[in-house]
Length: 317
Image 1: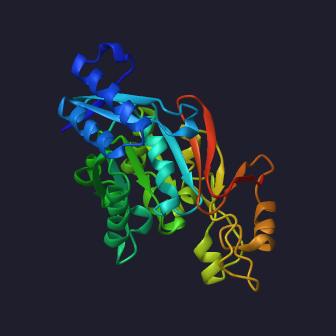
Image 2 (image 1 turned 90 degrees about the vertical axis):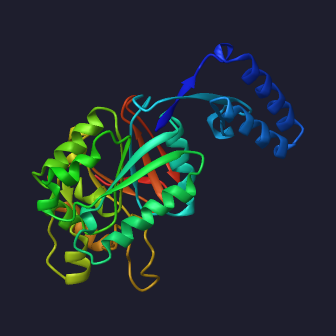
Image 3 (image 1 turned 120 degrees about the horizontal axis):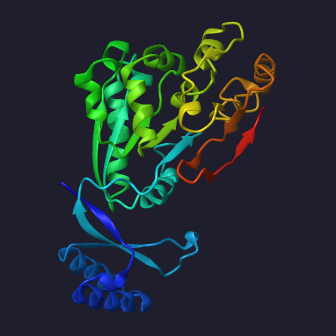
């Protein structure tokens, strides 16, 4: 399998490719997108891929050309994506696409880690659905997606299972139970591998339960909201400290599923209980809320971040 290498200097392109690019730009300018697509296919036959950069980048009308190269190329950047919700909703497609484009690769290996949902009988279906979403939603990338079935602590220490994580360009971990994820990832070889891979350049995508589990302090949502246990915090995996900063995340921050009769903001707990919980934390604690269908995109190489999607983030503490 091969990947694509960004050609930054178009003067280095073969004459035939440059000629086809000129013709394609003329076709696009005339609105003849059928011819434009045909010319793109002709360029691809010559070993080059064309990507038209979106207008929101400020590069309207510009493009990047990628040469099919070997699979050993490292991503140009790595990111931490934190979703408040909607990680496989249509609203997230553009978030993924614009982030993946910055990796300057089209052949991307994505590993889906199942641990947060490992207790669920339908865990294979849950993560299979996530796999199908990536494949169907991002056809302009050549994705190799493998599921890491680390459903419990034993699996998370089993090298036969977790070695499939190696050489991943992107690692994803999402829905399930945050406290289950903490229990079955803490102190495991899998957790060490995830941190090590991100430090070496892999992009990490977390959503829902995983954003909570990787926090300094993990909100035990099910235990409080569903079971009715007294208010408390679970010690989290503190993964963010290793790759970004020490912080706790509250996804589903502006959730309104409870309607007018039940406040389900603050990840279903409601403002009243959340306020009491937050008061229990050490004064130095940093807590950030992320709205539904919203992602915080952190560029780990540049140290910058942006908010994408329908909502925003909230500095709670």
